[in-house]
Image (cartoon, rainbow, N blue to C red; front, side):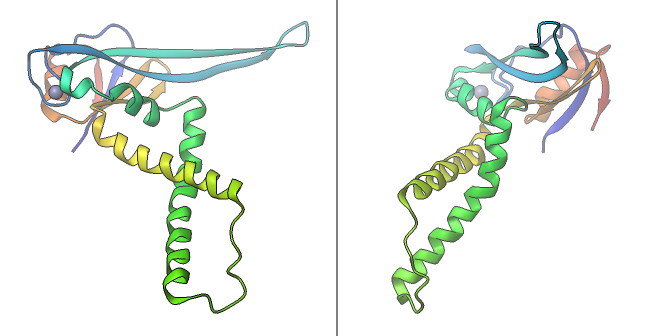
Length: 181
Ligand SMILES: [Zn+2]
């Protein structure tokens, strides 16, 4: 089970251990970030100025768990265009699986009606991309030891996969933890 901690923004101390497995040697840094648009203002010259705030945290993982972590973190991070793509993949990924099952059924049992028209190639490619993304996102979640799931005012919500690491983090930052869920 994951542990969720709401902490105050600002510098934090990290336990000297891998956030995934807890080993204490061969550690490297991994980055997690959250992006939020804070303001959109029309400028005097007719342009738009978009203010966004990026919060980054750099936490330790062992070399083994650092492998592929950057991509996995990118796939599941909040904010930015990736969130929209992920939502689309949640919709189209399962749909693609259903369509593949339907066409497999047609292939096995034969088509009874005249509705067995083939899908245009461009659509098939698009669905294939969403299916790949859907599978990649599902595989990415268990590989990421720490997620930043929210930023409200001056607080951040951290989701730890490893409970012991979360507990060690809370002990190291007694003044920062606001809430534990
Ligand atoms: Zn590890």
